[in-house]
Structures are given as C-alpha cells and as structure tokens.
Length: 243
Image (tube, rainbow, N blue to C red; front, side, top):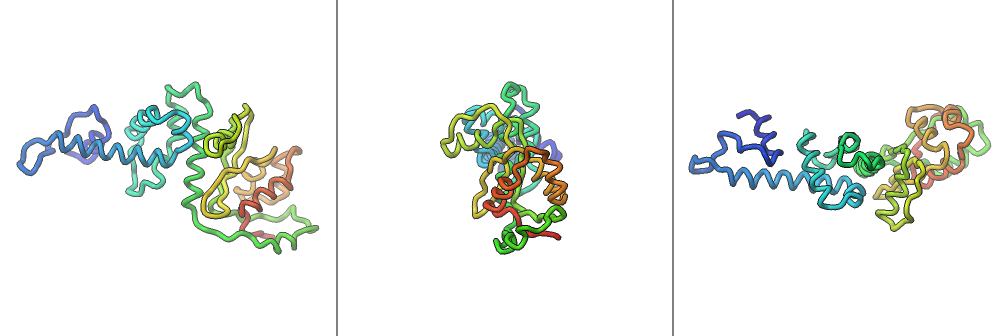
C-alpha cells in the first residue's frame, strides 16, 4: 500500500478501505479507518470554515460542508501547517459548477484569503507622521513607497468590500458595482478598506515598486490621490520612502 493510495482513500468517503489496514489483532479494521477518515475530513473542513468565514455565511453551513468535501479531495493539504490551507479555493470556486451562477464567490474567497494572509504576515512599523510632513511641498513623483508586509490588494468586478461589511458589520445590502479592496492591518486584526476610483491601479503599481509618478499615470485621471494615501496612512500601510 503506497502513501498516495492511503491518502486518496483517507479523503474519499466512497473509497474502499485500503488493503493492509488492520487492528491490534491483525484483522481488517474498517471501522477504525472510518473513524480516522471522518476525523481528518472534519479537521480540514473546520480549517476551511475558519479560513473563509464570509464564503461560509453566503452559502450556508450545509452547502459549505459539501463544498469543503469536494475541495479537500481536489486539493489535499501539502503542509502540516493548516493555518493557510485552502489557498486554491478562489480558483476552485471559479470552476465549481454548482455556484457558476454566483460569479462573486471567487472574489469573496480571495478577500477572505487576503485577510488570512494579512493576519499571519510579519509585523512592521508605519512611517512616522513627521516623515510625511517632511515631504509636504516636495516633488514626490520620483519617490517609491515601502509597504507593510500585511498589505493585500483584491481587485474585483463585484462589490466585495460591501459584501464583507454586510456579513460582518451589518452593512447595507451591496450595490452591483465594482470595488477594489485594500486589506490592511493597522493593529492586531486586518480589515478591508474600499479604495476610491483609480486606487486599485495605483496600489498595484506601488506593489510592483513603481514610483509615485508612474503609479499616478497608471491609475488615470479619476484617481483621488489624497483619498488613497489617506486610507494607506490610516491603515499604517506605508513603512518607508525611497528617494
């Protein structure tokens, strides 16, 4: 019996008990294996529930459990650390026919994943306010901003921030508009911030290491630079400036 065959049977409730599974008496032990299989599936499902709380709220507990079963068979864990298990969920949902009519779900999962990554990212110190004051009136087009390791960007054609707020903060029902989410962790817990027009392209440029001037050009004429920088400063997203 190979490890791959054992793992496949462990994650598939319809698979037969692998040959060679015996108890202390040397006899076949299908019940022991079934208990072990159930415990493994339950542990992985609980990990996915913790990882994708917004997704779980949207589809309901029963549907999420079935979804998790299909997911864990397609994407078994590759690490002993389960804190980031499920990173393939957005792409899995994009191909999962039972939710094909719910086009926003993959991006909701991306936001949940971004929140989890942000939570586990390294700590950092925000650039002191005095440093920002020093730059007032200067030619900042050639500057590059250093960003907090916990920063994540989710660009979406769906109202992902509004969906998150409706499910976690009692926000209003989302309107059918595109929203770019900037995930920041100013203190202990991350949260998503809704970026104004042009903000997603601007932050994407910063993440690529472009200068402020290039990022402004990338974002286009609708960019509200003051508003975007205000969000980043409030969220302690900027850790340094390269002149």
